[in-house]
Length: 280
Ligand code: FAD
Ligand code: FES
Image 1 (cartoon, rainbow, N blue to C red):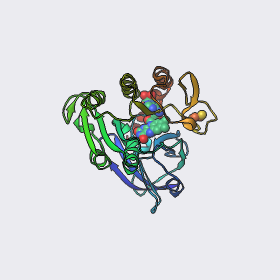
Image 2 (cartoon, rainbow, N blue to C red; image 1 turned 135 degrees about the vertical axis):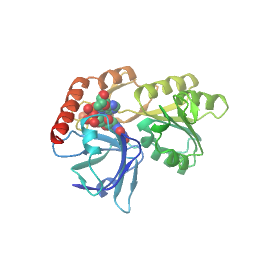
Image 3 (spheres, rainbow, N blue to C red; image 1 turned 90 degrees about the vertical axis):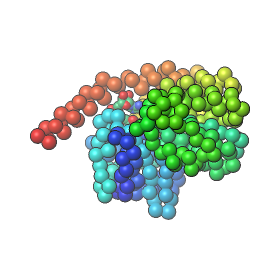
């Protein structure tokens, strides 16, 4: 069991947890992920490592409640504990001095790019970040991204904060205004990563995305997280989750992500009924 030392509500359905897990912080690097089980009957939830305190042995994660397991996780409280945390998994992000880096996070992809932006800045890159959200009340980690970047643009789809539009609009403007990045890193909804990759392909800019393929064992054994990269099958959990965005078959990934939708909706519905029954 792993003690929850911090629980913070970033928005109505996005939470930040700090959890005592020295076996994770010992080896954690930007781009790694962990697999969390809220209780012994729960599903395994892959979550990116948002931050870590090696001295105190505390790992930080940010998650959005989208279904049964993440809702269960969100119900746990500070002082309580998580049944299991394993990892770190995945190849960590390759950090070097590329020159100028554009780091792009969409929604709950922002916690995943935060440690990458920080590591790139520490390695001497000029880091221009863009974070995007649907609307103002969904913005998370703005201050943290600002501290990890040389410049930060916040975009909202409806213009309720920052610049109006998608992260791709802000990126196009950045490129065309002469601040052309040597590398682009983008993490967020698959559709966003696809749009960023399509844009940067036209400009010939190296682009790394982090794929949130469905995962089961996260050890390369089950094949559940397979993705098509440049015509070759790769396992996202061990070969990724970072891949060259120009080689990813995003349409195949999107279709695999929806393959269990009916089962997930049914499980969520049952969970709501159980809660209503318990609360009378
Ligand atoms: P489910 O009932 O399983 O699904 C509910 C809805 O969410 C469905 O519509 C389903 O299609 C969608 N969904 C399920 N799994 C995924 C997925 N892997 N990617 C996108 N949509 C999904 N989420 C965070 O909030 N924060 C993170 O830092 C984070 N990091 C991740 C890192 C990796 C390597 C991977 C593979 C996923 C990551 N995710 C992250 C996504 C997270 O694991 C899923 O949202 C979670 O497993 C959903 O479980 P659930 O039972 O609550 O929902
Ligand atoms: Fe099973 Fe990747 S999750 S092979």
